[in-house]
Structures are given as C-alpha cells and as structure tokens.
Image (tube, rainbow, N blue to C red; front, side, top):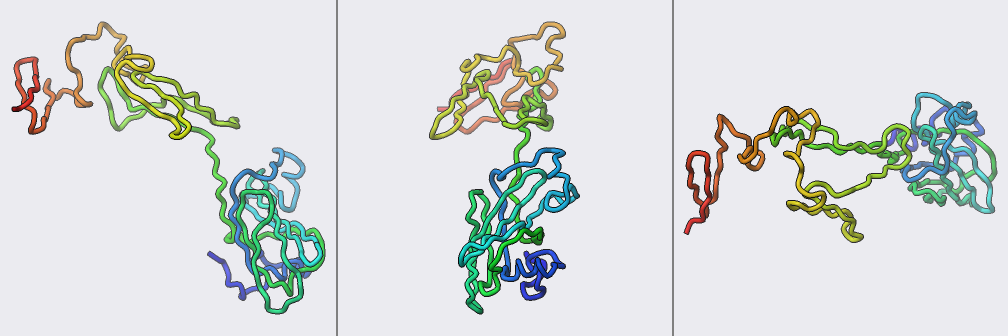
Length: 276
C-alpha cells in the first residue's frame, strides 16, 4: 500500500514537506519498503534524556517510526543510515547506494546491516547525494511493516471439573508464566497424574497418557478447582458418576454401542457383550 504515487510528490517516500537540505539528501531515493523484525540494535533507558528529547526519540503518541538519520560518502557509494523505533527499542539499518552519475539508471539495494530486518531502497543513481551529513527525516508509515510482537505472558487453562462433573464452557487457570516485569518465559514442564512428559530433540515435547503413570492416579476425581465440595462429608465410591464426560440425567446415562456390541441391562448394572 502506498499513500501517494511515486511521481505525485517530490518528497515521496518521506513525509512532506522537506526542507531544501533534506530534499537534497533524499533526492535519489525513489521508494522504500521496510520489514522490522528480530532483536533491536539497542534499547533506550526508560526516562533517559535520549528517550525524552526531541527528534527521532521524542515521547509522543506515535509508537512506530522509521527515520533517516544520516548519510555518508564512501567513494562511489553513499551509505544511508535509518533508525526504526518502537517505544524504547531501536533498530539501526544501513544501505550502500551507488552515487555514480548515470542519468536514467535506477536500481535497488537491500539493507546490509547486522539486524534480522528485511528492507529495500529503490534509487536513481544520478540523483543520489554524493556527500555526508546528519538529518532527521521521517519515512511514510505505509512503507513499513512491523513484526515485533513479543509474548509477555502464557496462561495454561483447565476445563472446570468438580467431583467428576465437567463444565465445557468454563475454564480455570492452571498456571501463569511471565507477566509484568518478566524478561524470559520459563515453563518447567513436569509429569502429571496419569501423564508423563519428556523432551525429544527431534519432536520437542512428548506427552504420554496412561493410568497410573507420571505422578500416578489422581487422588480425587481430577478436580481442577479448589472450590469443590468434596471435603464436605464422605464421598461415596463404587458407582459410575460419568461415562466419557456424560453425567446422569434423571439417574440415567445414555450409552450407544456399535453394531459389534450388545447391551445387557439390569437394575444398577450395564454389561456390554460382543455379538457373534
């Protein structure tokens, strides 16, 4: 997406209006596209003079900015340095652009810095500035994509289960990792009831479920909330409370079997038999 056609304004792809000096410094840059990603080159300290000063680090409402901050003559090339800023994080990107007088010749170069960013400049070599200087010129925001999202918190949830009765529309937090002030997310995986977890280099985490493995069988009905009333009195045992998550309706649990099985029912008893 572009906000103006390349030929519609001499200041493109920078935000107008440009001063005469700024227009001279950027005259040979016809278009640009930046994809900002990976670790920043450096981060500003919260409340530092750089973070609160005017210019490319001003504390305004613009969260994302890309600015041309300098250009330097290097033989038949000019090195352009940009800084992409997101909050207090800054990426430094450089481009080496030919400044050889060759009327009508256009080309493109990619950034040659050490960041993981991917960016390109399209230029007219006959108009590229053959000099050096410090500038502060903002690139149009439509010329940049930001892929800098960071996971700050991971929450693992359990389905609500109390005394063997589940509520499929309700979830309760099982564990929270990270959050405000955390730098790294560390999740200490461990075995659970009827479950073992192991790390395999070729497959990552491997979960194995089975009765009695891991921490063994659950000491209760597998309750996932401490607000269960299981501590109130003695819990009866020796009866079926659920079958595959189905709970009794008026004392009955409907059971459907395949064509290869039959049912023999008696009061308080259900037997599945194999059909011959």
